[in-house]
Length: 163
Image (cartoon, rainbow, N blue to C red; front, side, top):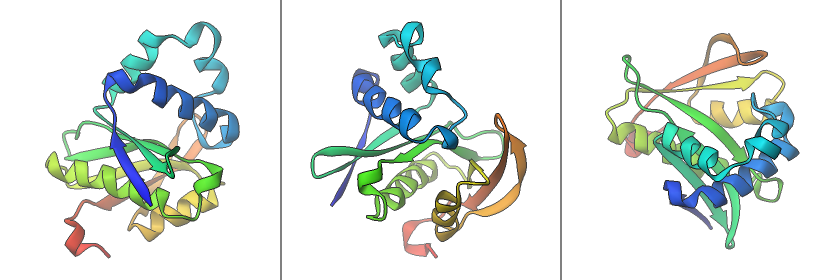
């Protein structure tokens, strides 16, 4: 069973632990690099600020272990929330963790009055693209983040109206 836990800045150490694993295990999937968040970049103040910069941050837990993470931005002027920092740990892939994370961010976006959810994914990340398509995301163009990536968008809808 997947349990979604919304984080506060006081949960920075939990976010840090899983984010460092994510950047180490799947560097091809992120714009950030592990080295940027280690050494001098690895400070409590920086991790706390990261959780403040994006107002919605969640961890997914499976069997008492942190299994995934995702964040959402404040809705922009077009009522669009961006989904950021999505990661599912290798041991939890294929068990609904990604589904739970996407729907947690979508539910939060809906509660903020957003109409759309947007994300960027590198076009060689086929498993992630398939997951996002299952959740109603469609290609909306390409962006440079920090290399070319596919931008995907879906409407935010009440769970009872999900596809």
